[in-house]
Amino acid sequence: KIELTFYIYLLSIGLNRVEFAGSLRIASCISLCKHFVFGDVKRNIMLSSKSSSALLRNAFNLRWSGYRVLPAASQPQLAFPQVTRIPPPLSCINNCNYISGARSFSDTTSAKDRRYHWIEPEAEMLIARAYARHQALADSGKSFPPSLSIKDLEAVGKPFHYEPKTTGDKVAKKLTNAGEKLMSLFFRTKYDHHAVTLETIAAVPGIVGAAHRHLRSLRSMKRDHGWINPLQEEAENERMHLLIWMQHTKPSRIERAFVVFAQGLYVAAYSVLMFVSPKTAHRTVGYLEEAAHRAYTEYLEAIDSGTIANVPAGKIAKDYYRLPDDATLRDVVLHVRADECMHRDFNHHLGDLYANKEEDVYPTKMGI
Image (cartoon, rainbow, N blue to C red; front, side, top):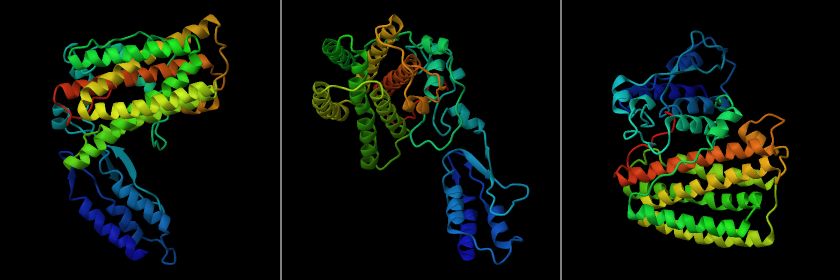
């Protein structure tokens, strides 16, 4: 095992010679390995396989994240190096391509130049803050921003609409309008049942879109530029919405049969649409999320009017959104609606990227 650690030490020297993302460098774990191999550790103490695995993860997992591993002043036994955030070089900031490729929020002042030009800047910041509150896909203990106030979450309720510009946009809008009318006729005032069925449909585009980008990356043998993970996260978020609502209502057999039929039809149709016209596919999702925003606004109105009881929030919702113990159904609906705002605007943004022939550009994250 001492020999294995020595090989890790040699590998770290090689890692220290490699540069990533335009002058961003990963400093190696040389001092840590020197401590293990040549330090004053007792010779009868052998490194466990767990420690070796953790050291390897420390060396490799940080290489694309924009972090640098710095040696601690004095390493205790089996301690790992400190991790410090290294700011991007000025050239990366000027080119707006640092790691995520996201533009600075302050770089775009005019409405025409903003990536999310169809919504107000204040709304963009609120939506980004609200969406950062839930448990992200494959999250590993990241810190979370302070909870938004009820006033802020209610401010996210202001509807925003992306005006159709092309024939594909108009087709997407008409398809979504037809689906929204069908759902309204089917569920009427059963907003909780409507929410369950809506989430079974809304969770499809993210995973289909991620698979499309994944296969595209394999076919073209090049990088995806940060599209796959946000789309997977969108699908995971919508699926969690479904699990949250299942703690508040149970769909009938007719509704379950409707879900099976609608999901099969939607998966097939959306897969074809994504292959034929990804721009129209993402625009369709953007309009679908606009409809979801309206549906959750009606859900809130039903709770406020007393039509639906404002019962305590379920355990899944409390864990997912880190809500207090006294959280209610209304609080959950506010958070879910804020998520739908993020999906609405992000998919409209992806549609714009395809329209501008920028499918190989990093998507811009909201609020950055």
